[in-house]
Image 1 (cartoon, helix red, strand yellow):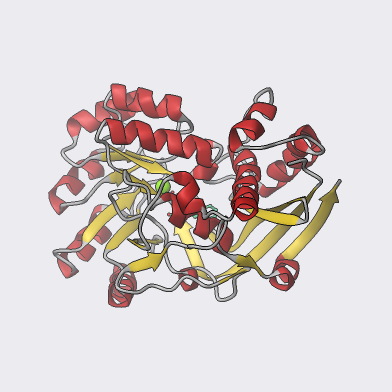
Image 2: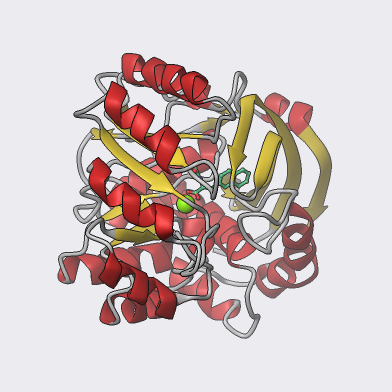
Length: 367
Ligand code: NPQ
Ligand code: MG
């Protein structure tokens, strides 16, 4: 196809409740939506960069800039027939994985619609439903945290992830474990510890956790390997794995025993697939991370999480866990602890343009 037009929207969506992690608290989620047009068809993608550079250095502002000034001009008017073709056109432009991934997602959606194939089939996934988990933010009060977890367990979530940071770790996690002795439970520090402050993480070894996610700094594979030697609980890397290369290096030095895959963090679904394939070959379990996506990114996550190596429940919750109103139909509803994998063409969701406009701070069309 020859890419004729790309529309960008910067959205601000109110969360149903504030979400607190070791890098800060959000109550409004920004993201970019990217709509790609050719041959009378539209493909949609979501860029998961937020307004605040807490999880990663990318922001909705930097992503907008790089897309408008560099990534989109490199592909507009060009013949592009596959995600590999898109990646090749962007290969000389460095960095900005979330911006890159959003554009690639729009192409996958366009290709699926043009050929009448679901993203799930294009990626090589299978199955109509997948088991999912929920990520629970840091609470000041442990009783309130236990109540929140109880609510999610009641809704049917079979796996719970607790956000932790120094000062909010052993005590709240032990309280949740005591209230739910058999719950599949894991924690995520979002890089808040160092080897020097990792003492509490060793105490978590006694609590039967599935994994400890990203305890140390993003760029620090070496110290993760040292920490893994001192822990019985598997370390899972999130922020540190930005490509197939770092995934391979992390596994080779035993810096982790589980990997969280997010297409945004690694620069697109193609790179995510490659990491999945590597881990499957090495019998390393993977799961699909979440970035508080709208229904568009959520649909892509569900398709990705239906691949065979995704043997652990991901952070892919029902739409209403984060948003009262969304920008795509249908809403994803939890049934028996699982969500349906969209079966329609491409992402398999219909974007609600009125809702997109309502949540938009800016809109720009490039032709
Ligand atoms: C994680 N996600 O696994 C991320 C972190 C995260 C579901 O825990 C705004 C922008 C809010 C990005 C909250 C979950 C965010 C964000 C959390 C990323 O580490
Ligand atoms: Mg994480």
